Image (cartoon, rainbow, N blue to C red):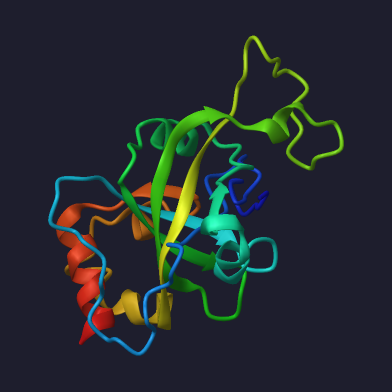
Length: 197
């Protein structure tokens, strides 16, 4: 996939911190089941990954083989380093950006840790990076798989009411252009509660 957004990442051409991107289980969660089926009991990392809706949507991810896709196109060093720290089993909110109502549209799981982003080597790709070589790659991506598509997204407008309270330290509000972000665990659970109840 190649998706880009503010900073670049599934897509965002990172020159400012935003990225784009994707993924789901072979069998998407029943959208009529209000209670999330995502297992958050084990110790894992939590993130938020942005993808421009018109470049790579959660439906695009759902249509992929095994609902897995590389989160490529990230061209922001901070976002890249965050992805390089991801482990298999970590979860991320899929954030749809560049749309009238941006927000969280689902959850993806990291299924492959960081490896060189192939788009940096492709002169025909909008994410081509001339300074990168096979021996010295610059940009990396992870593979993600769709875990759940939300029946009703959690919109930015819904979250803003908590921007100075429960989500005051969330990078979504403190580092708005970063396309790949950490989500503190308490905030992850708090956000999921907004969906479930």
